[in-house]
Image (cartoon, rainbow, N blue to C red; front, side, top):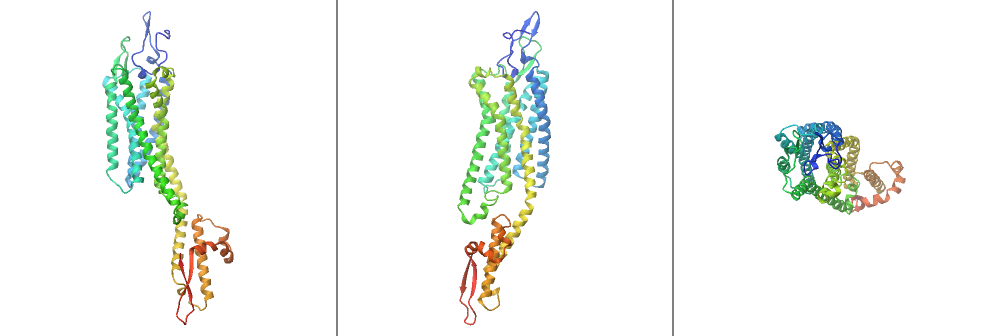
Length: 441
């Protein structure tokens, strides 16, 4: 092996080089640099991408199958967008990951210039599409929650069409920058590289920054704006509900601002965005660092940079896991809440019946003579209503006072009865006694 000063002993990936690395010719024997031979970086790529390929294929195929079945029953806009997200992740799985595995195994490029340009295009197309579809999902949640009256059947399709078109436009430069080139000192050694594609280093850095903005910074800004506005509006609505005394029972419910379905979908989409940020932020951080200070970044082990890009690719494997987690949890919660909803429906019917009973004059309920029986009937109806209201507001929890005698119930529910019911006397004919009428306050 040649000395470290004569060959490149640091770089493990030729795609981060500015030009061809040097080789050493000793007595007719060529000593390649480490980026030109099978090394630890190639071994890492083969092992990790193979594992990610299996996980992502199973996960995204399952999600796509389930969403297709759901769409046949009744298509929803969010389901269609999640289908496109799964398709984008499958494109990353079937195009980028096999390419990285085979390329790491062969080290050099063993195909034509056309395949070099074509695969360079598809290598980033799935990544762009995944980012842009997540932007569409964020905008869809923004309009669905903040502007529900501005419904448009074509808005979702338009956003998805723009996402696909934008991915094509952003990926096209890759087909012009990457090309097949032969090593100047080693005949027969070809590589798919970007060497000599830029006029100077400034143009190269400008392209790298533009790529980072399109794939990461722009989606990140859209995520922050959409979900920030959503949670700000939810906070304002909660504050208005808390100030409304009439909405006491809604404050105790999970459906005070959003329905359960919307809440679950919102949490799922936000989790997908958080996973995207966690996966891609370290890689783009070091890319930005490299653009600003190349000399200091060169001191970072190249395996670290390789590992960060591989970690970013795990985003395609995490999305189906997030989808499955929230949908399985949603089904479990729906099954557990069936009996609770039935009890709430029964209590509502009892409350409505009690309201109708109290809105009628008590004289129609009691035909006997004497005010004592009339008042006793009124007190019994009032106590029943107060008991039902207490069960409704306390989450259908049986309290000790519920099974107590009538006298003890009056002691416990006295304030509730007085605040709910007003008893007034109505003038009757001289031959009949005055009968109290009961009205809801």
